[in-house]
Length: 161
Image (tube, rainbow, N blue to C red):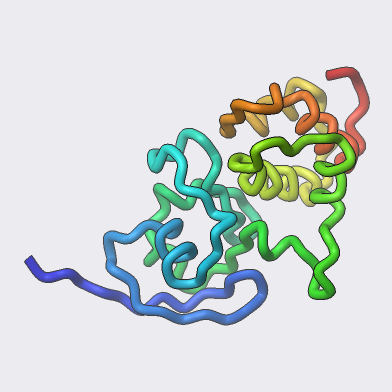
């Protein structure tokens, strides 16, 4: 059986990129193996834990179930792309630190990208809507409360969690 390859041209964290990938490869594999973007975690590899979340053209996706070839022509943001050029943390990253929303850190990159999508949407979420928007992530350390506080802090969400 021969393996087929295809060239994928996309923008990753603001930089134009091009590489040849196995047509069966996931976007997670391309980002980690070809570009060294290790914030994209391999968790469940079936799209249920959120550890591999990336933003593609403004919307979060589980990169483990997104084929790398589908990224052709797309703009992709990983957690590395949230950091300013001078190395300063983004506002959402600062909020996670300030609210103690990080423990082991495995799920954090996926949560940060979902939180970024939520904040950028400008939508005013209720607490229940926010919980639902973040429900595609599994975290075994924080109990979610501090993560919810961090996102709520930046999204201007009122209410008690």
